[in-house]
Amino acid sequence: MKNWVRAAAGVVVVAGMGFGLAACAPEPGDTVRQPPTTSEAVPTPAPTEDAAETPSEPAAPKLEQAELDRRLRDAAWANDVSAAKQLIEWGADVNAVDDTVQSPYLIATSEGRLELLRLTLEHGANPEALDSWDGTGLIRAAERGHWDISGELIRAGVPVDHVNNLGYQAIHEAVWLGRDDPSYHATLRVLVAGGAAFDTLSVSEGLTPLQMADQRGFSGQYGILQTLTGTPLPAEPGPALLAAAAAGDADAVALALRAGAEPGTVDSDGVSALEIAEAAGSPLAAQVIRALGG
Image (cartoon, rainbow, N blue to C red; front, side, top):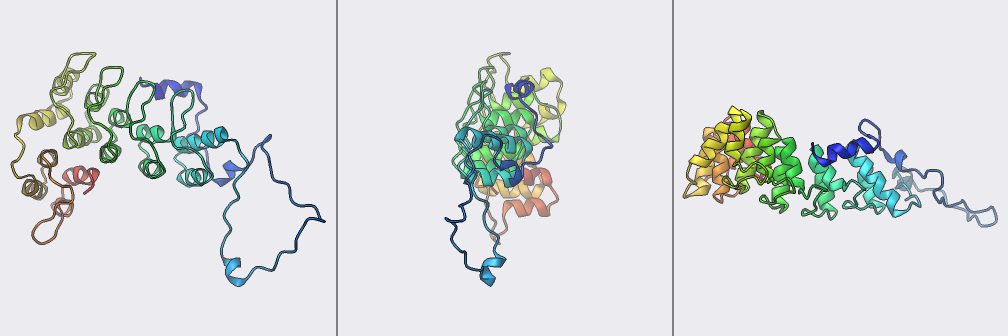
């Protein structure tokens, strides 16, 4: 089991709890601004018509930084993006970790929170941050089969070949600790499209991803990896991507992207590879292009 699962045993589970702005109200012990006394009060002009129609922003509570950061992690676990946005505006740190080395950014990667992940990246999340297993967000996402998160992280610059202290790269985790289902099949294609190595041995078992799939009895993963490892990269990646999209061939799409095709490649009529794949009725090909930024 991964650390973020183990750590949950020592942390209050917050999933299912609401973390709206009310959750950020001062708690007992917080410093609260007191209203002015009668002698200090200044008459306030009546609001104009425009002002009456514009809701005022919630005032920032007087909270310690550690409390703001804790509440942001709680909002991340609950996938409460609205509360997360407000807390970040108030100064909560998207990289602040708890004693289990969980940050809002890392929580988003393992829990598959795409909107939240984008929010943390927009506000300075460190793509190279590591968890207590020395794993990147990409390793965490791959282990959970989050193909869309994996693509977002590859685009953000997270290295695909980082090895955690279990001896695994992201592609090893997607196989050895994953399942043989469509979400993991898509994750494999996204990792391969992003440049993951085929032939690197895991430190722990001394197996390649293909050998891992064979050992696990994952026929679907094995077939995908066998195709990807046994097919030469196209010499002309852009046209190859368009052809693969039209054919609805998700594996060929991954190889064209790996060879250097731009996800936003368009044909002579200005139709993108993503639009071509969608028109061909191939969600599997489309999801690989979309994950890498098409």
